[in-house]
Amino acid sequence: MDELSTVSFCRQLRKTMSKAEAVLWMQLRGSRVKGMRFRRQHPIGPFIADFACVKARLVIEVDGDTHASEEAQAYDARRRRYLMRCGWRELRFSNEAVLRDLDFVVGEVGREVGFEA
Image (cartoon, rainbow, N blue to C red; front, side):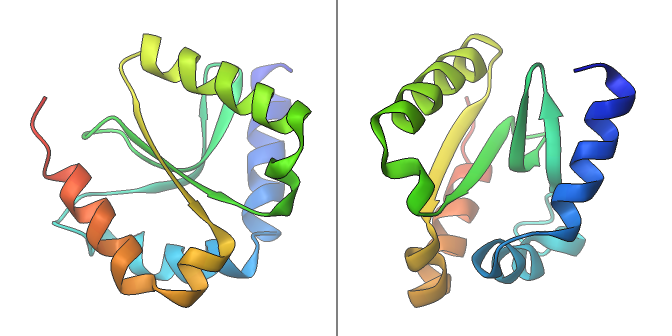
């Protein structure tokens, strides 16, 4: 995928966020978590992160049922290895976790962005 089509795809993803992604975005936007700026649907190499804090090198993924298959899990593992090689850390939450216990999820994100490598 070339850069222009990646940007277009990211814009489309921003318009079609899941309910859980939209709920979490309302907490992350505007530097509300420890003053850190997050981006949504942020390209990193060949992958697109649901949310990314560039300064903290932190990716946050919100997973629905589609991540349960063996194929999806293998893709996620390849993606995680790529991100780690590039110096990124990753947090994953299920849609249910975000919708059921948003305070916990935001607290975990806050702990991670406060992490000093």
